[in-house]
Amino acid sequence: MQDVLHLLVGGLATGAIYALVAAGLTLQFQMTGAVNFAQGEFVMAPAFVMLMAANLGLPVWAAILVGMAIAMLLLGVVFKVAVVGPIGRHGAVPLTLATLAIGLFLHEALKAVFGEAARPMFTPAFAPYLDFGGISLPTEAFVVIVVVAVMLAVLVSFLGDTRTGRAMQAIAQNPVAARVVGVPVGRMLLLAFVLNSFLTGIASLLIGLPGRIGLADGVALAVASIAAMVLGRGSLPGAIAAALLLGVLENVAAPLVPVPYRNAIVPLVLVAAMVAGPRVPVGRTPEPAQ
Amino acid sequence: MTALRRRAAIAAALLAFAVLLLAPAWLGADGLHLVSIWSVTTIAAIGLNLTVGFSRQVSLAQGAFVGIGAYLAAVLSAKGWPFATVIALAGLLCLAIALPLGHLCQRSHRHGLAMGTLGFAALVHLFLAGEPWPPDASSGIAGILGGGILDGAHSGGAGFHRLCVLVLALATLLVWRIMRSPWGRALQALRENPGRAETLGVCVPRYVLAMFAIGAFLGGVAGALYAPLMPQVDPSHLTFELSVRLLLIVVLGGGGYLLGPFLGAGLAVLCTSWLGLSDEGGDMVLAVAALATLALRPAGLVALAKRAQRPPPAEQAP
Image (cartoon, rainbow over all chains, first blue to last red; front, side, top):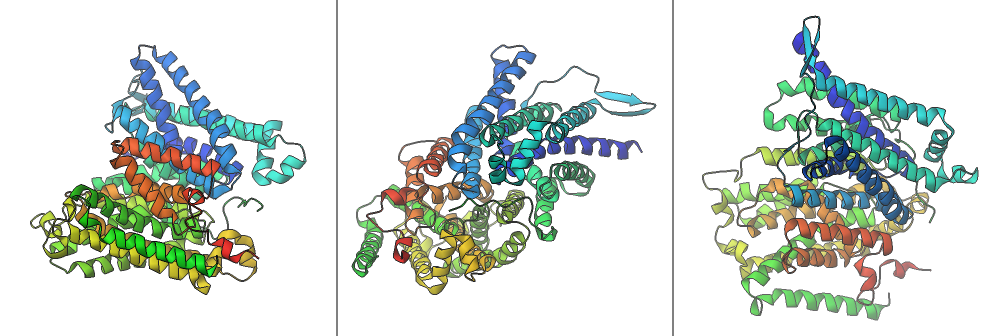
């Protein structure tokens, strides 16, 4: 009972981080039609900036604030203005290629500065286990699940219940029609990318909660969030549900798989999702007018 | 393109290959090794160009195919197979993998190939990283360094250099013939305007699949040639990052143009070798150059070298 609950809660925590990252990925995909293959590095970069700020002597809260601000500026505003704007007008394929270039750049830059070894992240000062009438469960998993649940609830209600959120949905469905009825498309895209960088910044804090953070996590996160988006058929709630399932599946299946191949579970699900997946198109398939 | 211009282009290409074949006469061992690496990178990039440049699809599997080819070459040449057979088998194995993979990835989504091949590349990486290298620890690397053509391959042997250039010439000829066939005309139509090509009866997924498979064949061949070039190569490094690097090489050189991969690979090799940059530094320069290309000049370096070869679509302009 204890073991099953442990696996389940751990899996939900892993899935919650996947969900946070996949939500941002899906948002970008809906707005631009391109898959952001740099999403994993978008999670890694803020974490390393926060570590760097802390190493310079800032208190932890200030390091986190600085990391978030820099992430939202560079991965949100600058990414939209310098990359999505000029390259996105050539179509979704060039933009996808550009995200691969950015992912490689960030990966190599982080590798050059910090090296490939996993590094200790901020260790929070709470009791390692919560006690529920005799059953003790890891605290960090609860922190992750609660934070992600709040963030995603706010995101979903923002997209569904506010005028700005509905304008973003209008762009996702038909950017030309949205522009015609007066939606400021450029500003909404900017908002979407800043939102995504905020989500990945939070994810980079949560992924460091167990203590260590390494560059290899970036690629794994990218694969997981793309798998969740494909399984969720390109819809936001679908991607969130798929990400939670994926996290639970990964944790439950892990003890059954030999150690070197444990990381193969998520890519295997991605390939299986492509092979056995729905034949209907996922999301809209925009192609710019020639 | 006029007939005269075409003949000039063919003559220039033949001359270039002749110069490359004769390079051992005036290049040192380091230079030869560099040119061999450039040739092999170009072969892989030519294959990827079929998918990215002509079919306008992103594939992240090319590095995995190179890794599979390198691994197979190491296993088979350790067992004493003739190297020509090894090259052919590496290509055919990748072709055989690419056909079902490409078919299954494409049917669910327009970006299916990009996302499915990402999962595939991750799996191949895990497999190659999990396997011991060299695969057959007893004979191991010594098998790759076997006599004959492989003699001194990793230190700039002239024989292996000629083999690389020869295979590069054959790959170029293959893609050039494809582009000039009726089949290639359909592909060019696909590159210029997918919607219109489809309306005119081009079965887009079938063409994309064929290009992906031929590209995978070239990737496997490149991998088999790559393994002997390295004194000690870990094929698990030849997967995801190499895929991205090859994609950026194609983008930089000019996707959809025959000459593009040659220029892109040349610049990438120069970045890491002659500028004396580390691997990380070379990749960062490559990424920034590819971003600038995508933003400012989507036709890539080929657009700058237009006088050397007119872009293929000009032939078809009404």
